[in-house]
Length: 209
Image (cartoon, rainbow, N blue to C red; front, side):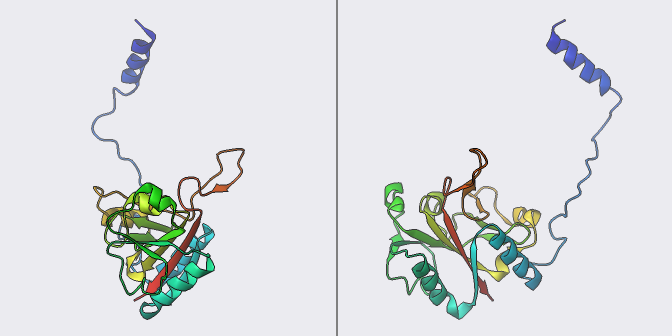
């Protein structure tokens, strides 16, 4: 009998008295067990957690979005800003250097931008995560990953409590991009390096209402 066969025989012998499905305890909160989307507690937690990940978060009313976006972009010194198809025109109205992603820009053209603005599919309070699914106002995956600067707009009604709530609400068949702060890695000698797998700088505008 080979070593592999001996090992498998021992596993079968050890599990011979187990029948049916084994109950696996789940200690995390299931979807829908917390506050509903847009709850003020969730909004505050999202802002806190996203800030912990070194994202710069601004909050504003619905009628102030264009001014806040323009101010954030100007503060970064960004001139050419990619604007995806479906992004509300009233939000990008004050961007002097807007570059339309329609038809979709090639990777080389994206690399020449100073940054991009997008909407989002959902946001998660517990982890400070913004999720994109390539829906209206979000662009394709490369659109938000290639440029060095990304500004994401999150409506308070899009903020859910935890990851299970987001998973339950999202379509798994869509190309999902989960963003928790600027792209960063500490793989080399535990030194943090930003901008390796995506934008080096992340701004988030939280829109009330």
